[in-house]
Length: 166
Image 1 (cartoon, helix red, strand yellow):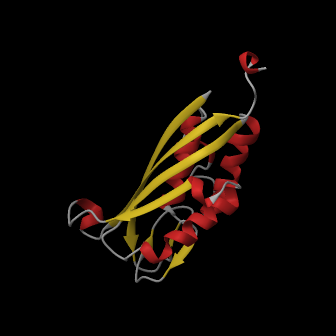
Image 2: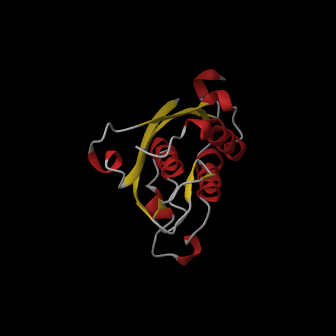
Image 3: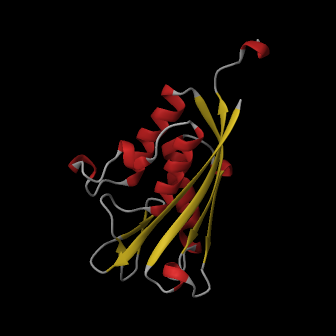
């Protein structure tokens, strides 16, 4: 059995916060505001994983009202989601495809490290993870430099043999 999930996240850019994307601290004059580190890429991937497994979104499991998740690294949350999806639900992550939308800063120098960070947490090869970066050509909140968004799609495969395959 295979299942597909999609995820999306967007956060505002503000002064006085670090910019963290894919678990990478990116030098920039602004960062994303949010309850955790506001890593939109990891949040989109987590929602895609949860959706593919038939589970609720990240807000259900990591509520902004819960102080345990304040300023936490989203990579830690991703590890928890992996346990829910791959441990509790018996799925294997086949691949992840994602895109970050930001007018600035230029993200291509950081993509390989983002892929490695995700690979290290999920214990899947970098070749199964794609991270792309694009601009919004001056349109919308991303294009105006007000925020950064990310989208992700994942493919899960059953890690348990079905009765027909035995």
